[in-house]
Length: 444
Figure 1 (cartoon, rainbow, N blue to C red):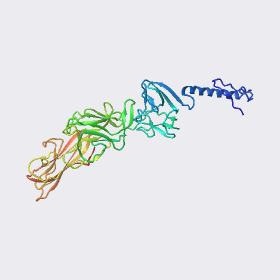
Figure 2: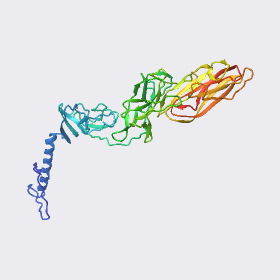
Figure 3: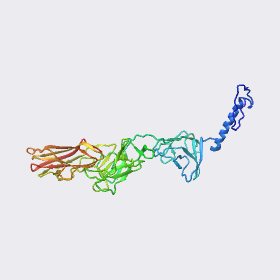
Figure 4: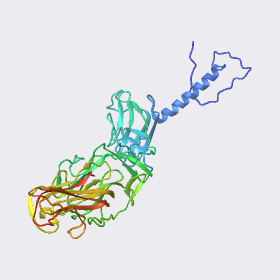
């Protein structure tokens, strides 16, 4: 049996009529005539494609692109940003799209862009899947955004798979980090009395969603630990902490007032899809910090001690702490209300980023034998106002009696202070120990 003689011409295909005789044999007879005409058309189409992509192992599509100082290399996946071709990378979903891959770079101002079947490459491992990399190019391990873009069939050939960044609705509630004062330590278990650096470090994950203002939707970003210096900041000042749009940096915004019990934000917060953001630019709100009196640093207390200061408050992924101030110094006092043991450090200072209703502050005192009381002072520097005292108790002999006082109040967002005090109503009194704490703890 002889093959049909094929040509390369795009000619009409003759229709077979009802009275056409199927003689076969030479290609002038039906149906071999029609078979030849169709074969000729296929060859013509093949010739046209090879004229563009090159003969042999065909690329599905290969384009010669002219672009001045393109800066691209062979095996760089690329996409078009509306103005020029740019290198794709897996840092975030904005740049993790890829329309084609560079297969040749004749000059610094031109390159060959291929899609589908690719040839003439080097350094590949046949059978391996290649992923988009954070810095551009392809590799066998995924980048931050996992995008498989190339399947190698040999050391020099493979298939490129375009990936596109279609707008997706990411959950606005994904936030994996915490503000902290120690690098790579999202949950503090040791007190930090002074840190000149604030960190936002991964905790439950290294992912966070931020508002994409250009596209009008939430996008997920993979982040590494971020930091910002506190050096040069004034003391005793509140700051809100925000995350920039691509989770690339932290931003500090000072409050207009940082007064205890009467703090006021300068930059308003608002809710977007249930998440608090800065009203001015929709940057994600991470939390609030306060600098220590010396300035240029913040602190956070984790153990029972005097002068407790909780000056880092997280908006998300909060951890429960129980602020507690102990003073076990046995002392005698005769006089009116004052700080416990005349020590101004018998206090708890804390910062909160939202209003807390029905917060209990509790004071306990072991004292006697004369009539005396334990006192709580909330958000006042002196003892003339804001004082809550226990019932006066009288011991017998040398026995000490426990007396208690608690304050139930609403604490607004900002800086607050609770102080432990004493009052020897009946005269000279032996005060054995005093305790001030937040009942039920606080989440920071």
